[in-house]
Image (cartoon, rainbow, N blue to C red; front, side, top):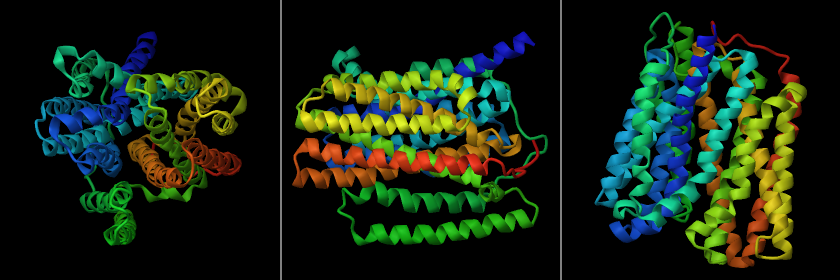
Length: 468
């Protein structure tokens, strides 16, 4: 029995390495863009695709990645994704042309889409209910460390210039981590899959890829292209493709076949409300665009100084998931309200501090710390609450849907609030532009806080999602 418990926690360590690499590679590349531009003679549009190609492929294919784990086995898909991620990291580092780098980044995003849902669904499957808060808390800390620490780590690697590398080092760092994780994972992780092999829903996979692709790509690229007509055409086509997807999935379900997404999941207000909270919460991704931009372009901080300036947020983000299991025992779903309240309060303190002085002082640092704690509490708590009642047979699908809500929320936050921020910079002083943007983020967290009340009442309903 003790050996089984020990194996679970070793498995979590392996899974967390996958959880670490996926967000790390999204954020760490930001600081390398100037060096990439100089080295590869890249245009502004090309640089944007280095970031957007990864994020779009990740978001578009993550639902399919979750379903592949349900069908072919979560260990197999996790290790396949890790191998592909490691290989494409090497290709990225050796790219001598911006087009090669963009292509490799898209494939790298696809591999991250295979990794991410296996982490969440495997935690749901291998840990008993009483241990899930701690497991999700550790996952949240690792995710937060990667997301917040990515820019600092990237700055340190570029400054160090190991082996004469500049931007290449932000990709090379993935290779030893990926190799070790893959080898250890082969021995530590146990395979789990349904006893009856199901077939992959190819029409559903193609339609949801088309739906999300037609939605996410124009949202990412629209601001840079000044919102031309094709953006609205793609968004309209996305709605049509989405309706076709729903019809196809209903047809599959009625015929007794296994759909890509088990639509009865969306009949439960508990699940849908949880997705709405996660979607709004992940608009905070705009903070990682707005605040570093303010530090580097308005206060003229170097890359390393800008990374160090977000350390209070990083410290809070790392701490939040570790204390959330203790709080969850007493507060139930209301722990999410606490986290969102801390996030809102933290952003208000940052706004207050910048209103008095454009230089970040003690009030701003305190605000960043409180916001980081709130950020770290909400994510693992919401994932645990949403996935805890989902049957094992559809855990991969549910994890894929949750991961999609995270990615779409992040994309929309950066696209919409980023557009607002840059528009405000043209009309107001930079501290005011930052303050207004973060103020809107605080309001969104308050809206999410109110939704938690609905989440509490809807949790009394239960739907059988499948056979456990």
